[in-house]
Length: 495
Ligand code: ADP
Image 1 (cartoon, rainbow, N blue to C red):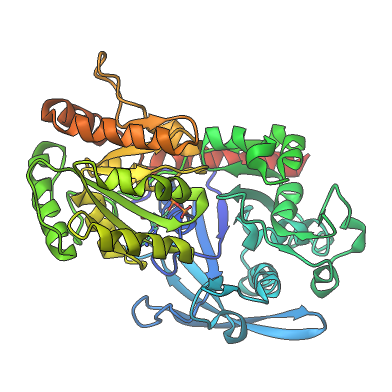
Image 2 (image 1 turned 180 degrees about the vertical axis):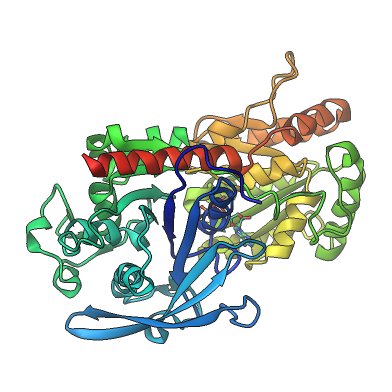
């Protein structure tokens, strides 16, 4: 039952390239799958639009054809997109899917192991225009479109240029959410004419970026409001170190830039109800967690030892995630009294690195080089601590999930990790994890060593675990802040 909205219910469209449970490569999909549910619970008319990828199984997700379609012209060629429809499972939130086999029937979403798809500029240009065309086809005019990351950065650009004179589109406000500023969608300038965009906006204050077109810059400059996924990351991306050359543009928009922490979807991430686990538990029955640990180790072919902590890592294998520092300390770390359970995919050199060390320490290290949601759930629940030594981390979901599962996070103090993990203070008995500030392999190693030592004192360990499990990172509060953001966008639009 939807709660009554405190203020006028809004019509909100969330446009994204990935949405849980239909398609996911990272945290963006978790957000776009969970935020709409929370907005719906607040009483808003929220809908979602995404591409229809080859991997999305129509039968499994009850995807049906609306009988409507759009036509998008790119470089003088028309591309058709059928509008399909389903709902976010367990809700009445509509999810529209733009179906075009040429652009979206690929094995992966953005890239293969050999690199990015060569036509990503056209693929997401097509999607962005198709989203706007779709609204007219459906005759549904949202108050605000919430665009996400570079894939949908052109939507606000179109709305303020080629669609601006059309009374159907003119009142629509835009909010632009940055989930990771390192991925910007930077393409050759020819995309301007392919997109039918006016060359007047190809200047350093608008869409131009080092001689090309930057989709994320378009989103930042042309949206009514901009937000990112934690307060600390908002501050960080305004600096040259973390702004990836967009810090100046963000500083110019400082009065319209906000940081709203992601929540997690406790319908999907809750040890008390998680059906990926052999045993369920909660804060009052946390002693059952060890049964999951035993099952996890058994599945991965490792032996269980009562006093040896298991450290978990579920991550994209990328320098952003601190994998370079892990590689520097692998040997010393594996000599500590711990076992290490790794799940991830990404850069080949890290696949090789983990495979190598798993060969050297077969009784202590398990490396699963793949994307596997069920195993991820098992690792969050079955590990004693969870490692996130990121160089930067816009919000980070792993540590929020770990906290809920009584798995103590060990993190570097950056972005959302700094906003959510508080280093345990032994005197005051406060804090929910372990953290360190500098981006140095020795700091990472020393922090892991302290955590492994602390595990020996189960009384202290239980206190840290308990502090973490008591935290509430549900979406409800953050969804209210998104509503404030949308209202702010509407006010700015009205000016
Ligand atoms: P990012 O979006 O930068 O990759 P986040 O921490 O925001 O990082 O979100 C990552 C999400 O993807 C989490 O839900 C995490 O559990 C999941 N994930 C990452 N790698 C894998 C993997 N190999 N298998 C299953 N889930 C994964």
